[in-house]
Figure 1 (tube, chains in turn green, purple, yellow, cyan):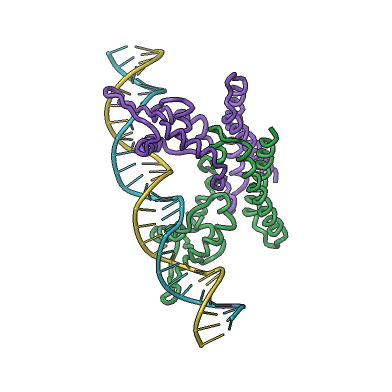
Figure 2 (figure 1 turned 135 degrees about the vertical axis):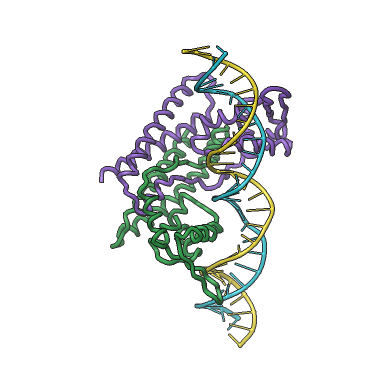
Length: 160
Length: 160
DNA sequence: AAACGTACCGTCCGTTTCGGACTATTGTCA
DNA sequence: TGACAATAGTCCGAAACGGACGGTACGTTT
């Protein structure tokens, strides 16, 4: 992910990465921002990114993807294998163990409605952009479909 | 989760927990089996479960939920709040960063088809059971809906 | 020009989880 | 009786988590 952002956005600070993550991948794969400081460091140690640092003031660290980094990223992207996906939702776990469906469903409904709107907004923005990158649009569409699915599910559950 | 299993299934060894987890919650919230050995230990320290152990042979540890444990479980179940759900799928991340949709979609299609069948089988079994518990059925239905959604999504992606 | 609020930006650290290697026991069928 | 599968548990290094905490830059307001 870090390599991906670095290639797509050019040289970035961990803070930049954090911003990019928050409005994209972060919606379905969250992580503490501290990792976006630790990970580029590891990648630097492995020679996959280069690092330069401001001497004064903010002392920002700016990371740049190297040729080796691009190769590693491409290799990863070219591998169609991926670990099993997971629908990590503790609301479902509570449901499983007998929690009151009504209370849970109401909360989730509000949540998913909100998120769907966000996604649809992002999608509208992206779709009309000229240089619209395929990947992010497709991912968003997965998100939209998923949100609609969950919405329908919780609504059904409410009506019983 | 451990408390939930312990209440639903009665006294169990970590190995039992592992088996139960694998065919239920494990489908959307995986964890290494080592945690099902570590967690009951923590719960025991907190007085939420009781522990007894075979002296010879397998030296099984068998855990039992206590009254305090049941109270804690009920409190947790009664709280309709839950952390944001996440659709953790690295295939989507690869897609986001520009991987070939075709290759990815084919793999995922096979995966989701398989899983959907598994879920439908479980659902059929559960539905005809007399004492069918509500929770697991509902959760399964969420899984089925989700699998169908992902299936439709990857199929669409393939056809472009 | 001082005070304030708010982004911006980074480090640190204890706790938990991950992921799998490793070992041993018991049951089963050839 | 020997082999293999299923059962059962321990251990440990590496990684992720989750915030607390501290500092800088900059535009408004007073």
